Image (tube, rainbow, N blue to C red):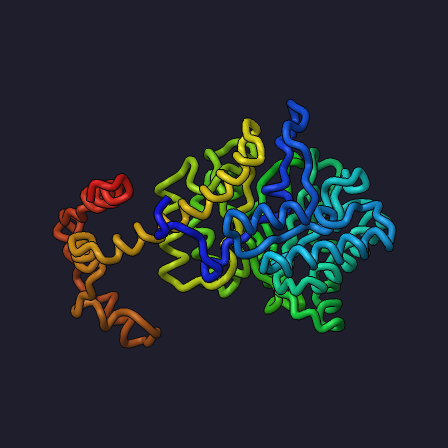
Length: 389
């Protein structure tokens, strides 16, 4: 394997304990891989060249662990991090697995469930801060409904808003310095999840008391599930200054959540995603929230993890080629060239500018008759990706 595509710490490639630790269980079949301890998974990630490891609270510490068991697990995990040099850039809370969350966590109709979810989250924030995590992700896996007869969505939004405002204040009071990242998904495991897209999350954030502390964690597969263009969602988040974290994987459009290896299915979409991140200078983690096929043993899991990182680096190289390709760049320069005749009409409004624009005579037929050569430009991109350019 070429050294050009070997991961390095500066690439900031991360995986969750739940990703490489997946045992291959699905709704139709039992696990096919034996579970590994968090310490074993840290060493696995170090072997494949990852930069960091992320976790839900219960990926590391079982929900029923005693205080003594918790402390021993934390000590062992810290030792593994020290031995391998891996970091913990992000942490999160599991608010979807335990039966208590069958009707949601922060949006449950039951006040006891909402209070328990807040308690669990504060303890998980303590755990994440203990390992130096600076990003804290919220994925509302059970925050939704199967039937709208069961909940008022305005109540759900109110409860979620109150919880996030509370956690921002808690982070401030503890000097944790967390940036909170909200992760959207349209459905699964609930029939419909609240705030189903990155755009919906961005709108919701503006209603929070500490909106400056809260951004988004867009996931490739989740936007694909809704039939949307992931790169566009990420660009909107970046434009708003809210791209606090990102989850990379792959997915067929409008299917159940598949969580495939990055680049496994949607090469062109993955290419433009990598190109965008590299072009704008995104300096956060490139987190792979995906799972190896159920067909694999742990050697296959390593192949999966290496494949995610390798594909990213290949596409990064392709993005550089795209940016340096003289024909492609000449076409883009022509397509986006300024028109000095039009320049006076853009920018800040003035009554004079508006009057002049209203009076301008446009030759619609001449403008619309111009061919834009988008077919040629797209084929050049395909040629580049297929390695014939």
